[in-house]
Length: 193
Image (cartoon, rainbow, N blue to C red; front, top):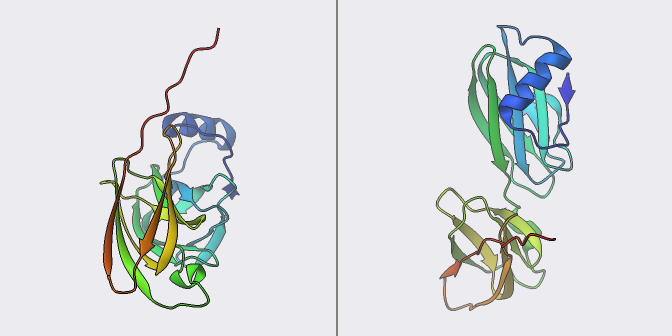
């Protein structure tokens, strides 16, 4: 049985809630909480579809057979992602995902030339957009390597709790690699009285 979890819960809270709703987790099964972006990603385990991520990019299953499993993530317009994961009996696995947009989906119809852009940010797991199209997230070091069509492009980096930064970059046909540094600042919250 696959359940969508539209609210944000910490894993310990989720496990307590699950045991009250579904009973104890049996020794031969494991729990999967998969979250990330984009939403509506098809999720397959060992070739069998278990469902799709919800609008929050989350899917939950308490019926994962313990052992080494292959998780396949698929969405039209994105590169498939395959993850090998060991599931231990009675334990939960929380996996964060981020699919990469297929290069062809951001191609300008008039050009097939691309340039490599190394994006460096001070924030990990920040969402990156090129010309308003979601590309992927920065890695644990705040970096992302992307191939972008030549010409003037708008690169936006944003993350909840931080400001959003948009930079326009001109990618010249005669130059092959670029480095773009973007620093996000935390959003300051003010107390309303």
